[in-house]
Length: 177
Length: 346
Image (cartoon, rainbow over all chains, first blue to last red; front, side):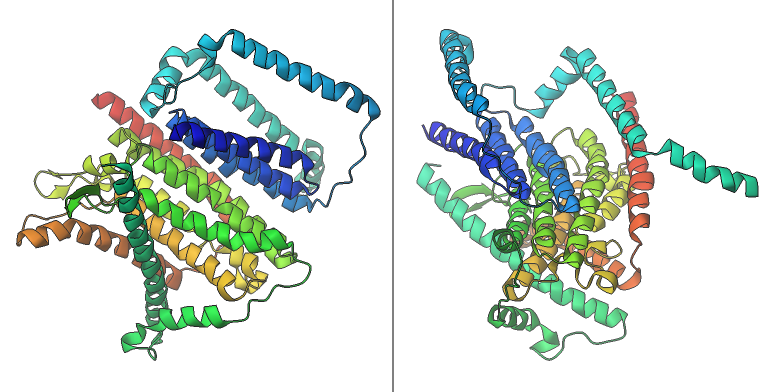
């Protein structure tokens, strides 16, 4: 019972943070709301028994990725956003669309309630189990993902370096040398 | 243990742990002023109490009674929240750090820490990684270019060195096979050939220990990596605009982080509370593990202060190059070699 109450409270905090993220006009407030969302998601994972995933959620998302978001906002010194009133088309189709979508999701979940509900502490939690799953059962997908991340890193390096400028600045040096 | 008893025991332990931590913070500041004073051929604090021992108390009273200035043009909610964020996360991380074995006090059997969790190490890393927000937001919300530069430097530095810090710990995790700090310490009990203790630092993790040491100095913004508050270029970095207790909170957060880092080093590399404890009457035998733990933490803190009194500050590009081009490859190499040795032994 206590679990259920805490779970619901953090679920509400999570949704409130997500709504606040959209409503806030200053980017740094939005970024901090996202941190709240990440943190409450971590608590939800913890309550479901996935302790390792919860810790990684905090370390990677709240502690590293969101710090970089805040870093970029600070670096650009981004000011208050100007809000437009939004297009009428979005209002006309967006709200019914969201309603239909959520009803569909709820209906699907209720139809398959046998698979949809997870008991408290039912998820594979201990790091040993996660490690076994990653490096034994799902070894190939895991390694393929790491190659994907490597490609992304190489792309970032290529984008960050300016090959044209490097060549231009290198040529006079060679002539002098 | 029923719910009421559990809550009562937890509250008592939290009060004791926070009390000890804050006292330790105050006297680490005193120790630092004393030791740095002697290194620089000065006396340090001498006037308040014997050997200046009441100086932290006088400092605290002074901080409380100073006027709390709120400069104009700051981003008020975050300016006020930033020191709280820094201090809260610095104090939280102590909750999963064990300082000794299980004890029975007044019929209650309890571990010598606030709570014993399976993923203790990950919780410490997660909580300390959130501490960056205090520093970064303080720098940004102050609306001051020196503060902003300090906050930017701090966040970039902490995120960069966190990687080397984390990788240096993986070797220890491989040897112990657990994230539980208590199990990691238990794996270091006993000796090789009867006299060399089985601490991780003597089990081939000495390189990892020095990587951890250097990354920890950068994580806690201490000399020689105190670029975020480099007073010769940035006035005081991210806390330039802070006064009174708000400034004191940053100060306390920094020293609490130092103590956490020292505790973690003791638990992971220096064998925790293990030491020669088979002599003396039963009471001494019960106290000795805590004594060894505190002694190791003290040595680690002393080295911190010694380094501060000895080394000059790095330049910022040197700091980044050192972190990414030297510490990170070294940490990866250490991890690969440790994993290979463990795999060959198995």
